Length: 562
Image (cartoon, rainbow, N blue to C red; front, side):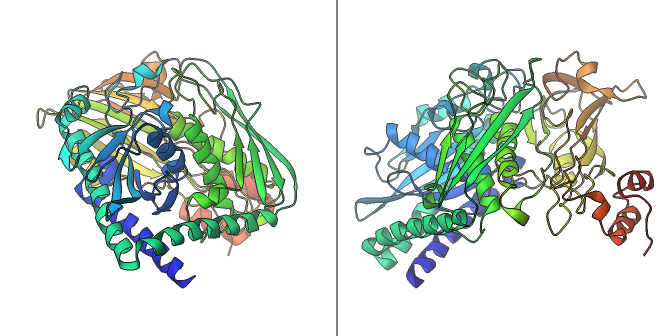
């Protein structure tokens, strides 16, 4: 047991080092500021052995990704090879998510793979920034790469590099980010090789098996604490960017002893627009939800997944069929899937349950020739929202939603790198759902265009229905995106200004110098009945400006001053 814990912590440390290397050597802000990546170690068969605390959307998907890749490239890999892959229809998540993996050989024997999964900000397709919010087929969403070697026996495969960099708008940035991902798996290979040699191959192999069995046993123990039964919940994606919607996500969770069956039968057929989730996304979202409801100290590896069975019918919004688009499934549909599972199991997990977070990254993506440099730039900027109220505390404000774990890009960095001036970035009062414990607040950000023109796209949700509260808590605030032209003095919905069908999902709006864009993210739901909230907490919210006096009276009644 002691040796297992030492090796497990050493592997997690290696994964963290891989992530730090990736952060420090990457070119794009989505990596070096937002940390939209995950680094891990997989077995020769593709099972996740260890992972660091980066992006939950990648953590739960690593098994599906690696097993799918290894069906095409496995036994023929050689020392020094690095494989790249981003195809959503080969076990992937969505086209921006690129998986790099490298075999780790010790004394000629394949022992593991070093894995780095990261979001590449620009991959070609209909719009700069990779979010073709009006796509109707996967071919609109940019370059798709089957598992191919980008390095062979330690040498670059020049033809593959050319194919990867030719169809994108920012080849220099992509080149730097690809190199950073390769550096991460190089470090993983080197450091894990040292660890295996220190303890010996036999001990390492035995420890990997024991570690997965240990995680499985602990997950089963968690499930045994829940009352057997069937627990259901449903939520919606408001629209798909093409005018259709809403789309239902329905789940029924069957708790049976030390196992859980998660059944998404009854969810809507797949959408025309790009809100569809691949099977990898649905698996990842389900695991993500269950990890949030169980003991966080359980080591994250393939053993955790064994007691969980997932049913996701093909041709539905939770298991899309080729060639439908899916770029929004990993960012916007993942949190909705995760929270249907959380909402269902809130009926049996007691105080571990929590209200819905903002549920939308409010993905703001753009591209332009920067007049300051003459170079083309592309950016994928994640927004932050509120987190749901809990049984013991208010939800956090201005936090990335459940599948991200990402940081916001600092205003100073954003203005230096991109031709925008950030005029305002603040919390939104009254956006936290009222409750015994209030939901966290969303944010609002106002941007002034300082370039001749910028092509802007947006992919969000939760603009018609706010995040739900729990156990009597109320709904959180809704999101929106607005536009004000340079020669006007009033805000209007951005989709109205540009003749788009969806208020939350649109592509290729041309913003010009002096125009402004204002993005407001959703708050979060409250936990418990508002009338049970401590009056001192209400008074403090008013004093801090989190809740207005008018809203507090409507939600909580008369205020008892401290």
